[in-house]
Image (cartoon, rainbow, N blue to C red):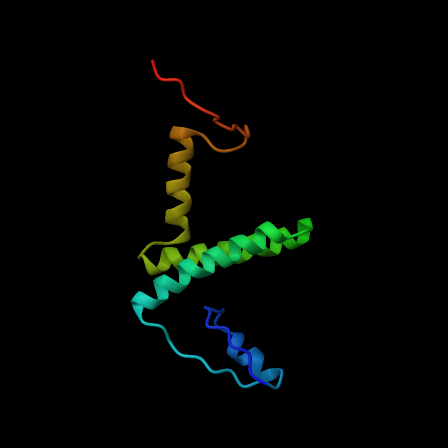
Length: 109
C-alpha cells in the first residue's frame, strides 16, 4: 500500500518511518521549493491549532508552529531571538494582544 503526502516533514521522520517498517520516499528541496513548502506547512499547522480540542493538543500544535517559525527565520538568515526582539519592538510601539481588542470600524473626520 502506498500513501502520498508531498509535504515538508521534520528531519527524523524518514528514520521513524523505517523503524516502523515503512519505506519513505523523499528528496531534498531546492531553496525556492523549501520556502514554498514552509509557507504551505504554516497553513497546515494553523489548521491543526484551530482544530485542537484540548489545551494539551493546542500546546503541541503551537510547539509545531514555533519550530516552523524557527525554520522560517533561519531560512531568511536570522534567529528566533531576532524574531523575538522584533516582536518586542512592535509590542513596545503598538502593544500586544492581551486586551483582546476588536476594532470594528474607524470613522474618518
